[in-house]
Length: 88
Image (spheres, rainbow, N blue to C red):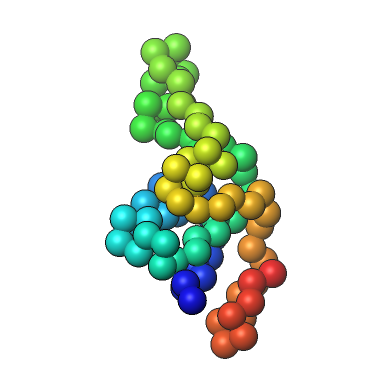
C-alpha cells in the first residue's frame, strides 16, 4: 500500500514538496495537492512590473502538479484532523 500525502497549497513550498516526494518516494506515495488557485505565479520579477520592465510569470498548477506526479484539486483546506487523517 502506498502512503497518501496531502499538500495544502500550490506555492513554491508545495511544488518543492511534490518534486521531492516524486524523486524520493516515486510510486510509493500518492500525492494530492490542494490549492484555491488555478495557477502558480512566479513572482521574483514582479518588482519591475510597475515600471513596465517585467511581469509575473504564470503557470498552470494542474499541469505542474501532474509533472511532479501529484493530482491537483482546486479547493481550500479549512481544517485538518491529524489523528483521524482527515482534511476538510
